[in-house]
Length: 110
Image 1 (tube, one colour):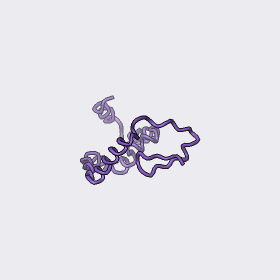
Image 2 (cartoon, rainbow, N blue to C red; image 1 turned 60 degrees about the horizontal axis):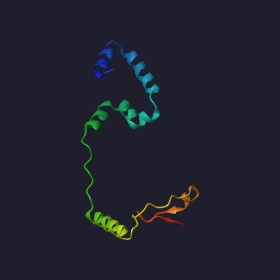
Image 3 (tube, rainbow, N blue to C red; image 1 turned 90 degrees about the vertical axis):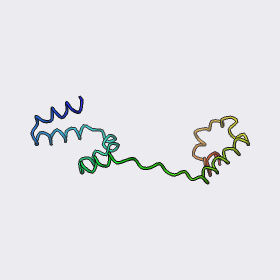
Image 4 (spheres, rainbow, N blue to C red; image 1 turned 90 degrees about the horizontal axis):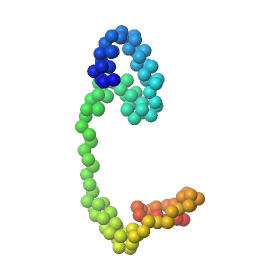
């Protein structure tokens, strides 16, 4: 049903019926959907929820050039050392709990 059709259907209900309808729809909603769409916040503060949805997205985070340079240099060094030449051998399931990785790209099995 389209939103305009839903609005037309809701016009014919009285306030008490709308409350009952809303509660039944809430109960029918999966918990994950309620959490993902922040339905509880919507119920507690409709106008705050709508203004938060319409607010501009957070600005993209600034790129730290020193960190980027370090990661590029590390990638070039790893490529030079042929760490990317071939994929690593698959690990056995029993060894997965022993993995440590001090930094990206330098995994070690203990």
